Length: 104
Ligand code: HEC
Image 1: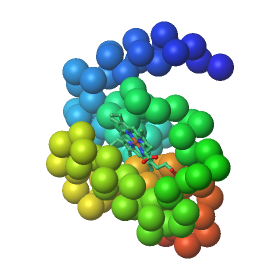
Image 2 (image 1 turned 180 degrees about the vertical axis):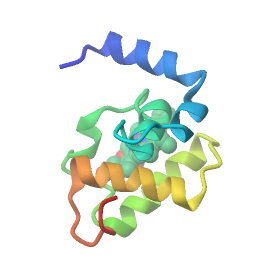
Image 3 (image 1 turned 90 degrees about the vertical axis):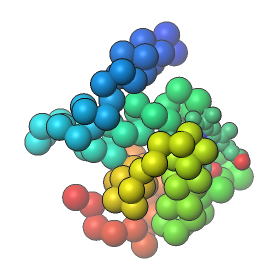
């Protein structure tokens, strides 16, 4: 279990170069979706957000909507590809909705 303090340090550290890092992720490292998410989204919510009872993301389509909603809220200007990458990462890690596109 990583402490909250470590997550803060990690997020703060990645924030400065997050974009470059996410784009140049070497093969075998964390996926682009995971990097985008940990740099831009983890500051506000941890894992419990994605398995709470009254989920907003109830299938692949609504997961996409939520990821898009949050990147837009944070004014990140993500492309549809970025949104899909992050949604795929969240689906792989937490949601496991069967109607998602095949994993990369
Ligand atoms: C300002 C804080 C904040 C940031 C930044 C943020 N979120 Fe959230 N997120 C929330 C809160 C609060 C909720 C619960 C919203 C609700 O219940 O209406 C939420 C809910 C969600 C959900 C729906 C969870 C569920 O299944 O109910 C998804 C998916 C999500 N966020 C993805 C993201 C992504 C992707 C990013 C980065 C682009 C992001 N969030 C950035 C605060 C944040």
